Image (cartoon, rainbow, N blue to C red; front, side, top):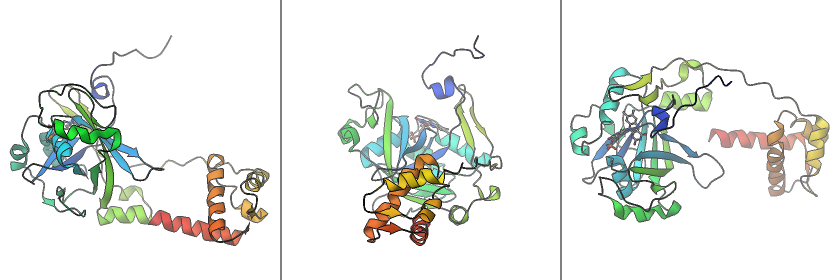
Length: 306
Ligand SMILES: Cc1cc2nc3c(=O)[nH]c(=O)nc-3n(C[C@H](O)[C@H](O)[C@H](O)COP(=O)(O)O)c2cc1C
């Protein structure tokens, strides 16, 4: 017998059929008159995180929202992340109330705004945000630029629909947002560059969405806890030598260079060795020694810090 009950899956399952922890962001977009409009969003997650030409976020939203309409028309936005503060969260929930025009909701907006750092016509960003991602919608994926001509249909859009970018259902829209810049307040910038401690995390709330028609639920920030990662089991030196020997017919590794790779988890070993071989080829090195490995490691950590 299962220890679980099988729950019916209904629309908006993440908040109607589950407890799904989510971020809270305010998305700035450019309204028709060039002013900045703010909308509250939780379904906003990293999408392309590595191995592509650019990094991207995914936003899922109602296609009649000001945010969706502005993105379809002008394709630029900024994702503002605020720290935990009950007053600010109340204002965020107000900015999440559907049906108001940008002008109506922004008339009483309590957040101070300032310019971001991207060139061209861009929405303003929230001054007290701890981090902001300035983004451009990639409307080339799935030919979603064709949906730009379907703006203004606020009572539901008829088919056809796209799978993952642009207008995806009668009331839905998905946007793959290329990240142009990540702007960070100095305190948190320093924590990322110099190493984070529990006291240096931004106080980020977690929300659980609307649970009924009366309340929106969220939890206050709690001090983060550092959980030790299991110590990587050292790969057997002979295993590393075996793999290193087979990487390239001309470029080889000394045994001491291989010894420096025994801490690399096995799943990443081939990629790490390939990185060394690529460096050796660029630098006309045919036998990789511990000195070369040091240069490669320094180069890697410099690139990481950049
Ligand atoms: C904290 C919070 C998170 C929300 N997340 C989403 C979301 O991810 N997607 C969505 O379509 N609506 C979401 N909503 C509802 C929108 O904020 C609402 O549709 C609002 O009208 C959007 O503003 P806009 O029309 O100015 O874009 C959320 C509301 C709140 C308060």
